[in-house]
Length: 112
Length: 120
Image (cartoon, rainbow over all chains, first blue to last red; front, top):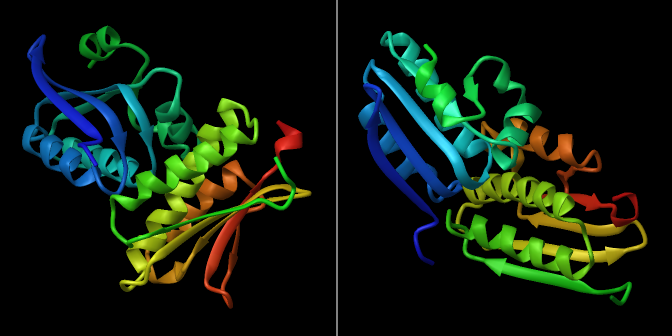
C-alpha cells in the first residue's frame, strides 16, 4: 500500500508547523511520532491536522505524549483540528479538555 | 441486501492491516446504505479493536467479519486477547462509546459490536 500519511514542515510566526495529511493509525503513528519528536524540543509547535482523514487512539497517544513532553521542556504544542474525525476522537476521549486545540491555523499560531 | 450475508476478511497480523480492516467495513456498510456518520464511527471502532488484535495476535492471522442480522451489521474481530495489550481497555472504551453493544467474548477470543442501521 502507498504511504497513508504525509507530513510537511514549515515555520510560521517563529513556530514550527507540521502539516499532516492522511490517516494516523498503528501503521503510520511511528512516522508521525518521529517527525513530531524531532521538532518538539522545547519551543512552540503547531500540529495542523486539518487534512487528517482518520485518527484513532494510537495517533492520540502520540499527541498526548508530545503535549506532555512540550510542557515538561517549557514548550507548547498547539493542535489544529476542524470538525471531523480528529475532533470526534478528542471529544469521545475527553482529552480536548486539556490539549491545546484550535479550530483554525491562524488562531493556533497567534495564541500562546 | 440478503439478510444472511456474511463478509469475512482475513489479514496478516501487521500494522498495515488495520487500514484494510477499516476499508473493508466501510465498504460493507456503504453497500448496506449506512450513513457516512455511521461509517466513520464504525471505522474508528474497528480500527481500535483491530489494533489491539494485531498487538496481541502472536502471529495468528486476523479475521474481520461483518454479518447482516436482524439487529443490524454484526462486526467481529478475532483473535482478540484483550488484556495482553495494556492499551486495550482504552481502545475498547472508544469502541463502546460509539457502539454500546461492544463486547469482548473472552472464551471465544473475539470482540465485536453491532451497527444498528435502523437507528441511524
